[in-house]
Length: 455
Ligand code: HEM
Image (cartoon, rainbow, N blue to C red):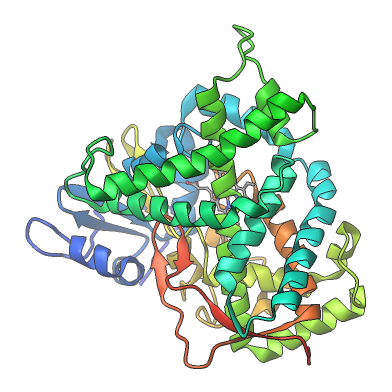
């Protein structure tokens, strides 16, 4: 039972699952971290303490606890060492850097995500979606993997909007390399003994090869821009033109590469996962799909949405928000305490790992009526009494997602275009297994049949 007291007594001791001698809950975490975290939250309350071998792990299950760590006392926490795999994969980019360096990079990238900029991306987002549907029309596949398709689509959109480059031809190779790299990064942080990537084990060799593919795509875009000498008003130009206030130096190629890799990955994988889960949910809830289609047809009558249409399509937004509630792509984020802290009366010692899991929070019966149900209407009239951090698909505080408006806009554009033009149905008998690795993804894709005769 979660018992969030308004004024919590100090010195509370967090409890958690006993686990096994020596390794604690490690086997459960490897087997099914979603269930382990959910059960720990339900049984041990606002702050549950898990043990993974020698590591103490505090799972914060109350919005007020998340607020303390992510917002109120954010300066006392850094990203946890579990981001190490991602750091090796992406280098020192916005997601993984800290302190003054992070602040400077965030300031540099921020203007590329200004609402006015995003407004300028809408027609590209729509055109890429239409291109994809035209290709489906030509190829008429009996079934398609909606997850692979959404990865390809959102990758192309990120390339066109942030880098002014059409990466359509690179999508397949980039996607395959990304799968290898993500799997490697996840296994790396889960390993009790972390073998450095420089040691040529078969896994490391595969990872290095994948990393070279990923990096070569990004650096080719940089070189092409340098050669053309063009000054596009995009993120790439902003980063390439940025100079250090003190020294006047530009970013090194390494820094540029790390930042671009981070933004390219963070900018498409999460959104693709969210869209895939949305189509999965819609196929399971025909009444929601019907209402979504009616809204799209009423407002758009077959044309593509423009930015001005979005406020007139509240149900579309609610469907996306509800899908992000049930299947948050960033299903857990973690910090390490830089100093002793107290969270709702629980002592968090310096060096402890704390985690906030949108998966757990979004499905808490204490915070949401009918928590497991897919009910977009709940977002049409949000409960004014619900804590702001009961819902945090994009995180909170200074490290909140820089691309949240980009992602929400993109999904609000893509969804109505697709549902107006085709009907996607889950291949009968398919169960969608979840892969909670760095992000929450469908383990073996989302196989769907495609019909052009939209009901
Ligand atoms: C549905 C889509 C998305 C979801 C669910 C999502 C979620 C998140 C979350 C939860 C964080 C914070 C993690 C933490 O506090 O540890 C984050 C950070 C970040 N996201 Fe997103 N994101 C999405 C889309 C995007 C897009 C479209 C971009 C860029 C185009 C992007 C770029 C980033 C970056 C660069 C960070 C690090 C920000 C910083 O620490 O300063 N994300 N995202």
